[in-house]
Length: 464
Image (cartoon, rainbow, N blue to C red; front, side):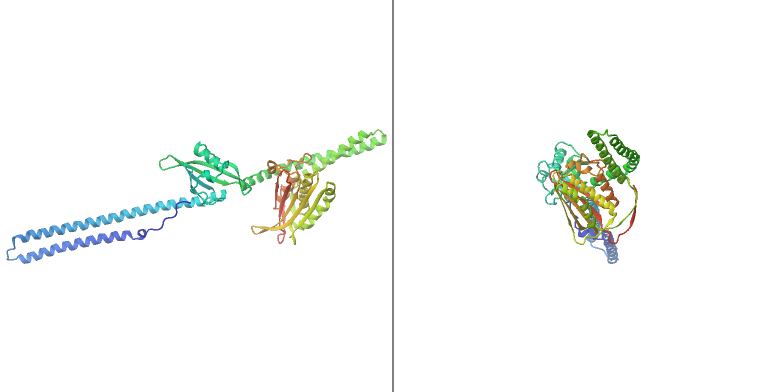
């Protein structure tokens, strides 16, 4: 990882100011003692010399002794000054080093704490630094990254390797570039940014790479876009449905009257009967579309009650059993024991299940199997009931999956594109979740999750 925190030096804890003061006082004391010795010697000499003649070499020896004492005093002062200067210099060095290590520690802590992955690569392609977020994003340990050549870590064709190749060899950097990155068969999206890593001399010393897993963020953005579209279409849908229902009813009624009139006059031929039947069928189809519009645009308060999931599933299975037999579809279920009730509106929950099952049947034109599974699960301390509807139909193309909940988007040529949009809104109103996984030729699985209703009975006001 990054440079480890330095160990505390023994000398960093010494009271340097106190030592300096002691040395200074010691020097002063020694100087005072020397001066006192000189004065004492002077007095002794004066006492010995009263009335007597001193030897000729005595005075010169005395002055030499005094000179030696002065030199010793100067040396003591000089040594004391050098000692004090050395201590002060050592203190400044220790303070500077400590400040530098604190700055390095702060930088290290910042890099280890930020949620964005950071990787540095030197000019020769060796990975020189990796923070924990990068290991989590790449799902690789520090030992497998740090000190290794990026060419050995990332295989040929890997998106990270392509980005590093472009940055190191062609000076081609990317900024907030989203790219797919699959690990453990889990498709993810990673946002990558690269920049030059400059050294102390101002020259390029490699590349720094910023990595962030934005899979959940992009999914949230997609959900917000869908929610915005739903909100914008609520009023429009209600208005269109209201304006079209009356003339459509009039057309349907007059078609029946026209059919009866022509039958009475005996001028209704076989081909005319066929035309009228086609018109009647299209009127009924338009009526169904308008009903979906109204369900899609419906707003207001909704009373939430504890709904028996098993009873709701059995009701849908009884309702669709006849169509399943006609389409040669094996319609089965597996429900967990003692499944708790969910908090919601029974009619709307049934609508969600019905829309999903109808889509599953349409995806199996040549027959197949549709299996409903319901069980309880706990996520982050919250209890949920998860209902899964799995079919063995044609499947859905990968590029179509993100748009399935958009209003009027459908993969069925005869569909309206509102079934899943209505289901999505109902699940939002219930505080639940809905996800779809599919692959062409391998069927589709739709999973919806409801919060359990035990001890949480309440009424929530909904607004469009």
